[in-house]
Image (cartoon, rainbow, N blue to C red):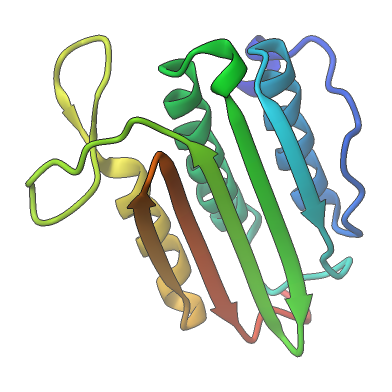
Length: 160
């Protein structure tokens, strides 16, 4: 799907991990095309014990959600801040973005109603499921026009 969306991916980030870079750079290219201001800081080791598919689920869903929220904002109010760091075998990812999100009551989860007017909310659930095998957790918060999703995963260094 990324190949269809992107004929050229710009390099915004060099974290030290090729998969992290590929995901972030593809999503940041989309953000730029959608006129979303982005601030991104990412550092990760060359090898992580996190499976590539799990990295895609985690980073992809968090950034897709942020981009979706920004599309609903006026162009001058669109922004995303991304921080990814690795310290002492702990991988931390934080995505904050401007948003007009409303918490929908479906098990206390944040969800959206996309253009098809159906209830959606599987992205954050997928992130929760992807971090679980790494003794990780997802925290989400919405306050004063800012949505924040933060992931922490433990023991993420080493061979897969």
